[in-house]
Image (cartoon, rainbow over the protein chains, first blue to last red):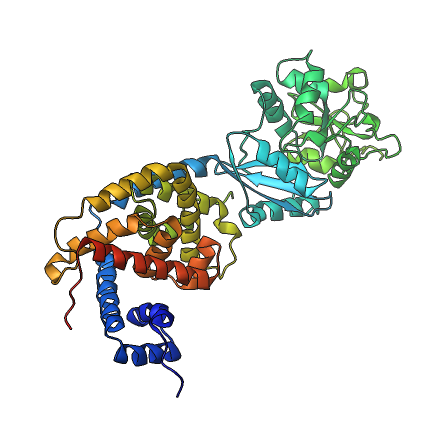
Length: 318
Length: 177
């Protein structure tokens, strides 16, 4: 039989035995030691008493420590965070990687992403908001966007949260742009007129350049006064062409412009659409017109064929 | 179509663990007022991070880790003041017997132990509390304290030793022989 451990050797095991945590060997060592050492036997007894007292701590009330108030304050803090919370995900798409962010109120950002890391960093810099990556929370929105980009849907019926619009003017521009139907284009000048600021064509272009919700708010449907696609999301003019082609808007790809001579025309506030040669339309500036790539898309928004030029009988050539 | 956030699963986590974490923080910080603040902060941090948790994560142990980290930082900031107060509290217990004999004074005994716990160094204090009050295993305690399970066990051992000595110092122990 091995030698009996010393007081010093047995000290830790003594505590473990009192706590019921000792292994068989340790327990045996303690048992053999206390059989011959009265001091350690007493010590073990004290630790047992202490364990009993300590276990009372689990049940003892803590009268000064009422968690109810802290819990109530926590709930209101969480509610506040939720109202400011923006969750986002970064996903692959036919247009490259896209960041989608949403809040309680609605979708607040769609962004073309060249690097996930820099997109995250940028998002984190947006002051005043709690930003959290959560792909699952954004996934349903992403699915709809994918359907849209694969031409399985023509509308993104999302609640929008314009928290990242920078001014009232931009909000008005975004609202007017959101009105542009699927498969249609208008000019920056046309949007300027619609927001009651016909001189502010450049400001409109700037406002759309910083559109926090491209695709959903279809700034790709806004073109230059001569029919040029001009810019899109920085240097991504190719995406603008892709989105317009998806909607059946013919873009002469070499020149990246839209030829109004091949488009159906709607002049607000009339309820009919025309061929581009109807009446005085050829002389009208693009800012007066909304152009449709197909009759179907014009009729989808409730317009009927003009009774004099009869686009239904004389379709424009592509 | 935008997802409703009111049925937030995090509510379940708050309901299940807030009271316990609060109780833990009362001991970890030695001040109920601080526990109010730190328990809120624990859950706010948890809220921002819980979706990144693996599905099989031990949420309770994870909350203890957050609470421990917060109280460690808090303790660093408030260290001196707290220590002075804890010492004063221990001094104030010097009247009356320290080793109670009956159930009737169990709460008094708990209060006495709590004061001795409050005087322990941080790691021993929280390791003791997590193990003996909240019955976490040594792995979880080690995770909270960024140390091994063995070191966690050693912290608890040192805490018990000091508490035992503390009770001795207040009143010489006479156990039945």
